[in-house]
Image 1 (cartoon, helix red, strand yellow):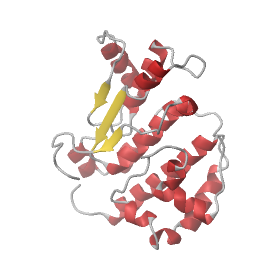
Image 2 (cartoon, helix red, strand yellow; image 1 turned 90 degrees about the horizontal axis):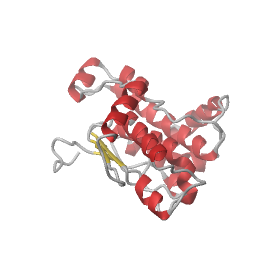
Image 3 (tube, rainbow, N blue to C red; image 1 turned 180 degrees about the vertical axis):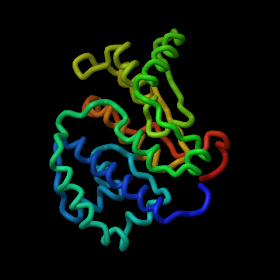
Length: 232
């Protein structure tokens, strides 16, 4: 990451917070206005755990700001954020990477070069995914993206597999449940990218949550895929 930058840290924490608030709205299907206690639960992840999503929020280098007493200082800012998001319709959400371009724009040049971050357009990701899935001739395809960024390849893979196997609420089964909830896995060294990829995964899978058996574990992890035994 190079030298520590307060401005970069603040910008990234802001985007992580936006992502959590947006995710809560997506799950609710509408913009929500929360009491202070619920805002704390959105920030530290309890809000999502209560909805059976076990690992949207992990303790990373933003984590200390989500705990007492520090979170009390940002509750009003999050409340204002929720009010501004009230202008948007969360009942109809697409299945595209809504954060990728913003992530690339926010990162400074040194940061991007060090982490190899580049935004991949959806049309390119879709073509690459479709080409590669054509080479997979089995009924249980699994795809690993070891530098997943904000998740564009994961999203396109989920969409392609759901289309190939007709995985919808109306045509669901235990076999399809196992397939779709294990068809992708992602790693990234950037904790900001990991949070954004998790929200994008939820966007692509949220309509199946009511049909799923067991806890919902998002298969995206903060890790250095080049040195898997190295703690981050």
